[in-house]
Every structure is written in C-alpha cells, then in structure tokens.
Length: 80
Image (cartoon, rainbow, N blue to C red; front, side, top):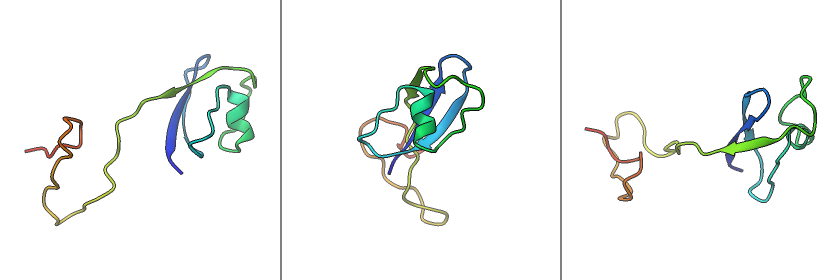
C-alpha cells in the first residue's frame, strides 16, 4: 500500500497515511476511521487535502554508485 500525506485545512496539521489506492478520505473523520490518526479534538467533518509529495527512490544504496535517471526530468535524476 502506498503512503499519502494529508493536511487538515483548519489546523494545518500534516499526517502521513498508508492506505489502499481505492480509498480517498476527504475528512479528518475518515482518516480517523481508517485507524491512522487520532481525532485529537479535530471535528470529524473537518476537510483534509491530499498533498503531492516528491517520490522517494526505493532502489539503490550505499556503495552501488549512481543509478541512471528515469529520463523524465523529475527529481530522480542522478545528481553530480
């Protein structure tokens, strides 16, 4: 399952959430129902917005040298 970041539109609090791609929570209460965050006094009907985050490379590691970029011009391009 992928990770997503959500921001509470009222408090500005940002949380990282792991859920299935078919789930699209739009309120703090829906995130709470998924069991991924505590309500912490935030009303259940408070809207949340999903943030777009830079991808984190999952391949490679220390001692393997530079990995080739994907060729799309994104942030995964090798840094020299």
